[in-house]
Image (cartoon, rainbow, N blue to C red; front, side, top):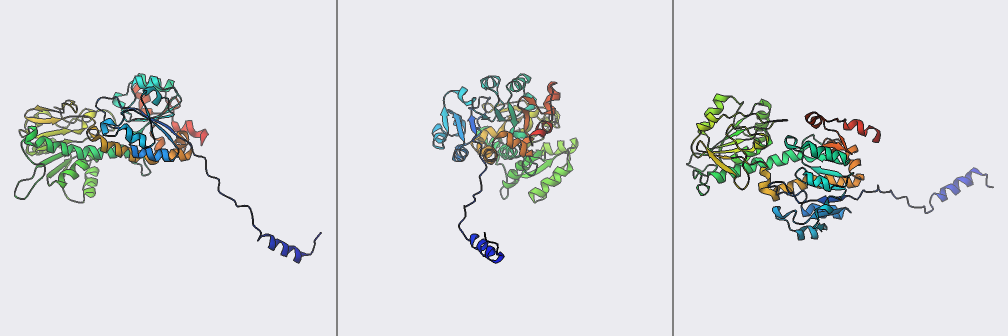
Length: 407
């Protein structure tokens, strides 16, 4: 046995230079997602939840995606586009609803809920104003985890889906107004905007949120004269800051608004209510005093509309005339530009779904991501939405309490 300290020191020094076993980092096991994309059956819903490019990304990350045949038809995506992206094309809708994660645009119908096997995850829109209690109860009975994509927040606390669709609706509403002013479509024969030597089109935008901002941006870009009304001075200030230019802004005072409406060629209704019906700020008398052939685009119609003369129309018969004013009152304007809207949704959800796979699945994503968690309204059959609980007189639990023992 060697006891000499100097010799031991030398031997230890030599040993440290010998080749050693390489220590590699053990990668965290990924959860392979099994995603189903059904064809939308809601009235005039033309969007698709995921575009082929996003499907390709998910498949490349080891996930399995099933797409019902002709799902992307109304957004000009073929089955071949999805097939080449790595998706499995299914002719039977029931196969789609056997997937672990069902991702769709519109809320599920009663028929679609019946096809679900249970203990699955559903990601779709949640339309509180038309959400049937029966469907909600069936989702709870089947122990579904239901996530409303319009209530998911990003890292800055913004609702990315609501904002993106608001941007689309605002810009598209101005394009629609331009079409309706054209003599080809029975309008006054005016160009939306302005050119040298000709008085510009006068636009009134009611609402300074995302829809109002992007309607204003589109109108200013075309050279129109724009006036914006809103009940919140902070939103009006934010709008002017975002636009980087001074425009006419005013709080909603009936006399000032009525005077502006009399001169307007186009009026965009872009008010939103956090819950319930949009406030009706334009009376029938105000509409009757507007110019003959002027145009109203009521983007707020899905919450009841902010014009007393508004009536719901659809994409097949989008307009009607009252008091000589052309009214466009189609809910779900983004569906009019379904391809752009589908890409916008996919751009938001592709990183979310990839991250969900990395974290190991939906449950882990809900636990670790507060923004994603804010979209959950049913967790494994337990209602977690206070609003839905009070509206339908159902018992609900705070999701933070449900997850407390899982973190």
